[in-house]
Image 1 (cartoon, rainbow, N blue to C red):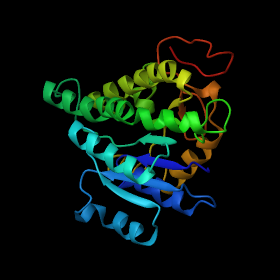
Image 2 (image 1 turned 90 degrees about the horizontal axis):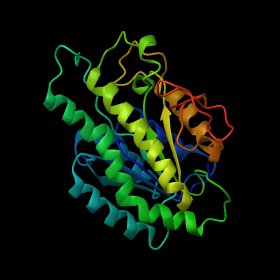
Image 3 (image 1 turned 135 degrees about the vertical axis):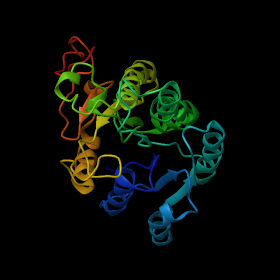
Length: 269
């Protein structure tokens, strides 16, 4: 995927770190990869710092999606590095997950905390970086919507699908489910709003992945999931705008009923 500039949140571990590693190894790596995380100086970001020391196109940026002031500061850093260029791809990957959050135990504080990171964070990130995304779209020679032109990719989850809930309720995780359902709705609204500016908006389910969040009983390794995600990005187009897709480009129904997505085959409501 020959995108000029990519920014990822939650880049110091799991899927985020896997994306950074594999983007750097692609035959045509992005001119700039902005890898953001909450603590760029701590031990958790050591692997990122090691990568940045070897790859001048990798820039570490301190950013907490739940803290608007750090988002504002990150925009300034990215603008300075891009030096007049636009941002082609924003990947909202950062997220939190509380496995014990059942209907009986989850409280208001936990719900708000999870929404703030998983749904509000991606909203604020898109708002803050929208001028740079618009700039990339305007200056691109690409036609139509694509990740090579300008795109917002929200890393979501099948657990946020209302229609699929009966099939995967063995893990209630109420705060996570509700926040990802909100993220899926946000993606759809972004798609309807930003398409006129040439910005593609898609939610991607990376699968059940062996990470700190997914646990070791999960189905996929990080490498397998990330390879799948990176194979999906280049084929995304107008017909996928606003959809929730998995790491194999299959549509996942998000709501209670089906609708016709512009003649395509993706089911949502």
